[in-house]
Structure formats: structure tokens, C-alpha cells
Length: 360
Image 1: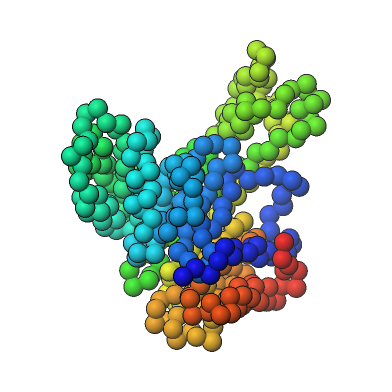
Image 2 (image 1 turned 90 degrees about the horizontal axis):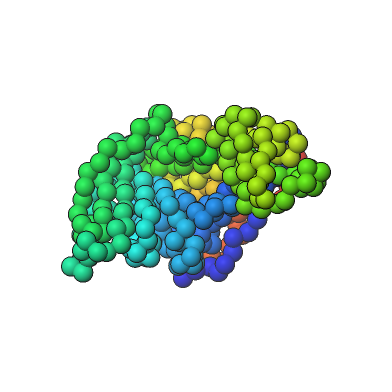
């Protein structure tokens, strides 16, 4: 039984310990919890200016609309306990007639588990005339992608082994505008934690557009992408009406550029020093930290036995990592009668020794 649609605001640390930001700048990616903190874990990362989204974990996704799920291009799965994978069937079914691929990345053995799941269905109605939807599944061992497989609709989703992409150590995925770093935490089994790192944050200054007699519109998304991927200042940007402008001139007068957002997702981690060190390395000065807070500190023996973090430890990690915002989730149902207790313990630990901490 769910506790209701309680997501709550993130907790925020004082501005003295974070990177400076231009006032009013907006992020390329908008992250939010998929469910309330007492339900299945997961974060939906919506790309603000593109028809695309990413998921961290794939538990119950019934709160997401079909349109939202059809935007998902990549899913990064921490581990395959049922509360982190139960939404696979719904997502897979919705994507069956989609022309562009779906990529899923998980811990060692993940591609084989996806293959077995797909083989549990019958595909006799698929043939060479079907939309050739492609599902890709890849294993990540905490340092690199080690194995990858494709499953094509026109081949009745028979497994086809492929070479996984090669990225720097510690990177599970990388594109021009962002990367996904990942570490393997101990949960009795490997449980992956993820960090989305935007390359750059680029926003438009509306008054400068007016001064330059330039219109607002989708063309600015292409201009911002050109900045993020590092095109030269002499690159010509097409403006509606047959005009062009140098990218360098646009950057100097109408675009504000700042370091990109960092969004970190941590769940199902045993409360011991090795995990803590890995989480701190991943989350250092992140803008958004989504972190499990399963038990209260008074019930620490339960946390140790079940290999989960306490709320106090989650807040302490967020404080030590100097993150900008922390959002706790994955609460144990034993606290349904006191639904704010875990969140409050995270907040108290997060703001300890930091009198500037505040709620946004």
C-alpha cells in the first residue's frame, strides 16, 4: 500500500559552500522522484528542451504516463531486486512499436537477465514487416561496460551479442552534452550508483535577444547545443528569416554559460566505510543528491542486517559531500505511521554544523 503522493521539497544547504550560479538559469535536465518515498525507488530525468528522458531504476512506473515513458532513451538500473525492475514489462510493451532504440545498463549479468525476461514472452507475430524496435542491454562492472547485447523485433528478439561502447574508467555512458558516471556499491550484491553530469549549462538572456533584434524560438536550442559540444566561435548559427549569426557573438551578448548540473542517485547500499567513500567520491558538490534513507538511526541494527543506509547517515553523507540539494527516498514501510520522521532525521543530519542550511 502506498503512502500517498508525498514527494516533498528537497533539502538545501546554504549557498556559502556551493558553486556560484547565474540567477534564473534553468537546467537542461529536470529530475524528480518517480514515486512517493515509501514506494519503489526511481528518478525520472526529463530533458527540458528535447523529446527525451532517462530513468534511474525501473521499479513501479505506473505514475508515469505512456507519453513520459515513450520519451525514455536510457535506463540505468542499480540492481535487479524486484522493486528496482518491476516496471520493465510496461516500458518494454510501450516501446514495441517505437522506431528508436531503448538502452538499459545494469550490474554484471544484467544482459542475460534481460534476455531471460524477453524469452518469457511469445513472439510468433513478429516478422520482417514489423517495426524493428531494438532493445540493448549492457553489463557495467563498476568501472566499465563489459558485455552488451541487442534484441531486434524483426528477429523475434533473439539475442545478438555486440561490442559495448568504450568510455573512460568509471563512466557508464557518455554523449556530447552529458555523461553518466557510476560506481558499484555493496548491497550483498553489486548495486550501482549513478551521477549525471551535464557538460555545460547554457541559458538565453532575453533582453540581449531584443537588443540584437533576434527572435526567441527552437533555433536557440541548436545554438545552446553548439556551445555545449564545443563548436568554434566562428560557427554560423541559422536564425529564422534567413539570417545567420556567429556563435561567438551570440555567446558574448545573449548566452550565459556556467558549469553543468550534477544529479546523483544512490540506493541500496550497506552502511559501511567502503560504500561511504565511494558515494562521497561520486556525489562531491553535486547539485542534486537523491539518496535512500530506509531506517531511522535508532533502528541501525535493521539497517546493518538489510544492508541499507539510515536517514542519519544519508544526511551526513550529503553534508560531507557538500551537495546543494538532497532528496531522501526508499523509506521503510515500518514508518508509515510517522511519515516525516525519516525526512526530518536526514535534514537534521544534513544541517549539522551548518547553520546556513535551509529549506528552499
